[in-house]
Length: 296
Image: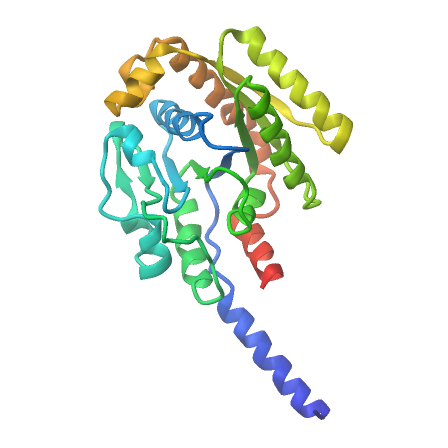
């Protein structure tokens, strides 16, 4: 190939990349990815009730269920959705038209159900999805991503692009080990991350703090990483009752111990970090685009 052919090929590649780059709207929303090392630790329930706690403060909140094909946000709030994130990915349905309204006017996008659906953003789907998501990030104060259990390669770029990562665990040794494994996986990416830990189903504040201390020391010793303590949520009977009734526990019993704790958790994660959010140099979409382009 001569140099003229090489130049033409390079120009064609540059034009294609420019077409593939998303239109980045000015980001308003602070972003949080909520993860867990394994399922069954109450991740989705905590995320939903934190979103409602922020909504109570008059904030515009969007909850996105990215546990695609196995989403349970609908079930937890006793709601049904006419559209899901799957429609955005596969049917190119506008993002804002795929948003449903839950209790107290909470806006959310369901992850949908059906194990045959895989979460994949290829070069064809990416520009449309990115433009739609970027627009949504300009319309809300907070966007919470409820990630699937574990860290799949398709979900990892979303986690790494969020301003903060919240790891949900419980005091059980197996849950602590799974949380450690999740942090190790994230640390191996080599990215500078803001990781926080919330301990769910504690018999008291001391148990939650002790569980975090064990996890934090192990992470520091073997990974050289630092994680922050976001707070704990007690093992409150009202939570299991609310799940059975398909009502968020914050609404079923606003003054329950779990409800008060989740409000404090939301405050610790969001209200006290407004200054750092304003200083972010890259938007969520810019970081996400960078990860996906690198992988392509």
